[in-house]
Image (cartoon, rainbow, N blue to C red):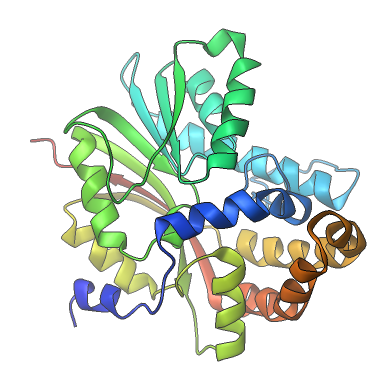
Length: 295
């Protein structure tokens, strides 16, 4: 079976507009149970240091910031001065701002969520030191509105898990990168034999198709024309993220119901435990640093 065949058999996946609609409607809910710093998996397992947090939500925000800083350090290594950078699935804008400060480059962030885009604008307005160096726009990685060879590097933190056609997205990113350009991405991979109710809970809460095996991911990367520069297993972070989301949801359920209504909690209540179990038992989490050919 080819990587393309494997991708076609991933199962039902939301359209980009559906992913955007999920973040439009429930982005603030996610911030209550995942942390609102960046809306991606945090680095709960630190690299050689311990930092105290006053609450579970504070721990999640701290972990997300640590993850952002770590990934920015990985991508920044070897970038040219005044690099042009693309943030794919930029969330609420915090990581793009950090990346611009860390690298000194110019960053364009894209998202399929109108609500997130508005939050990006608010954050950029408060960042006087970055005016003219960061911009945000509505954008779909499957159909990038950018010319060929536009960027020196790109990153995509927890965006690729949402995609129904990962190979097409990889090809689009490669198209807009210059020769020798780099893509840093985080992605889930499936581990073991799953239970349908757990898989369904994960795909609903993450607005994603089911994860594929890691070998399928690597095959799709190779077929898209990227070269693997670095792979790092960060699985402990997704297991702890699922556990933390489960605990915070239970602790803040009344607040969530008051804010989002009984329909939201009635939908989410039966999903949280199988979601936690799926994250713990069947999801691996990887950092991949990829490079386009030099010519």
